[in-house]
Amino acid sequence: MVICALALASAMPARAQDAPQNLVLYAAPKPVPDLNFQDAMGKPLRLADFRGKIVLLNLWATWCIPCRAEMPTLDRLQSQLGGPGFEVVAISIDRGGMKAVAPFFDKIGIAHLARYLDPSGEAGSHLGAFGLPTTLLIDPEGRELGRLVGPAAWDSAEMVAFLRKLAARQPAP
Image (cartoon, rainbow, N blue to C red; front, side):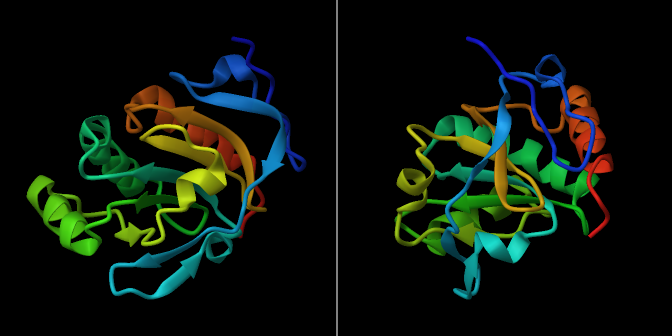
């Protein structure tokens, strides 16, 4: 598989060989549809609501064993990097809604991730996701920089260093 270099309009490009694990970076950012989803209280949200931040957008489900395994790593990543310039947005596609998500989060001790749900179940098809988990790295302008299909150790030292380096290249929100 050929991995292209990542180009950021406002900074020196990250190199594909710097990408940790199986994160595939694109030669140029790609458009991302403005997804519709909701928070734990049912409030409608859009992906555009997160503009100005680097977003790690993760599609997952409670019935997906690899998703269940990686969720604590996403929680720890949000704990380490979450703030004005970075956000992990983990969107569940569970048909059971928050009745499935909330007990799962409580059971495994997820404390730093917000609870998001795609009740339409359309996010995966809009994003061209062919399996779960699928994670997109999105720049502050809302464009996809790369993606990782399958589980990852999002809180690994290598991944955190890569994302910190990427965030440092972005203009302050």
